[in-house]
Amino acid sequence: MDFELSRHFAYKQRVPELTTAAINAATRYCAVLGHPIRHSASPVMQNAGIEALGLNWRYLAYDVHPDQLHAAIAGAKAMKFIGLNLTVPHKLLAVEMMDVLDASAQTWGAVNTVRFEACDTTGKWLPVGAFPGDVPDELRTVGYNTDADAIAHSVESDLQLSLAGASVLLLGAGGAGRTAALKLAAAGVAQLFLVNRTAAKAEAVAEEIRKRFPAAAVTVGYPNQPVDLAINATSLGLDPNDGALPYDPKTFSLEHTRSAYDMIYRPAETNFLRAARAAGCKTANGLGMLLHQGAAALQIWSGQPAPLEAMHTALRQNVYGS
Image (cartoon, rainbow, N blue to C red; front, top):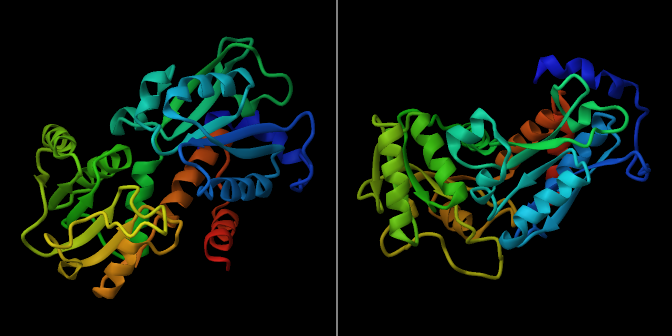
């Protein structure tokens, strides 16, 4: 938490307990932007967290085409939103649209969380949520990345697998895949195999890893040996009616990996995870990643520790129905 800002959020402790019906003229907004977005469980999770903190905020979801991303961010800024989350396919595009990049966004080269800040009368930039009354008109966007730490935390806790020294097959080298690849290299995986539909994109990520993390052994292509973990970082599986798999079963068998992780959390079990379970793998979906990246975002916006239990309960009920 940004402890320097804690005094600016103290007034929120006096806000009476809110219900989902208590929207009024003072209500402020956050949102997730993506394309598509209807599958997102972020609103359920974040609104549960917001209510647990007693904040007069609401969290929304908008389907925004990449061509309209700049306009959408500008619109949220003009309406003095608290902040935004960005999902597929916006995380790389947003980097060039930020006024300021936090160290996390600079390190991982992607933005999944935006905090709107306003300049107070002393010339200090503060989160919009820190202003109890009217928000000044001079605003800026600050981009963060909470995905990288979330994927590592989720993999290690949900699969009881230490990334340090592990061998990993990563499927997908787009926005989410690239961030995951860099984080895996930083976490000290022994071997990283990158597979992407467009090989040139995987080669570019591999080259970036070699420059930034020279100790990491990275290979483009499928492994010719067993691995500890296979991760799906593609969008294949979002449509439960699409039988496509994110890997080539003629080239690689899931029987050659101990664990499988899918960043997708809805449906709760994708074709990839179903195949992995049938092959005897320990499996986990992206619910933990969503929880931890979302909790970090809420903390960035509010200056308060996120209520993980409330957010996790809301997620499980929404995705699993229990």
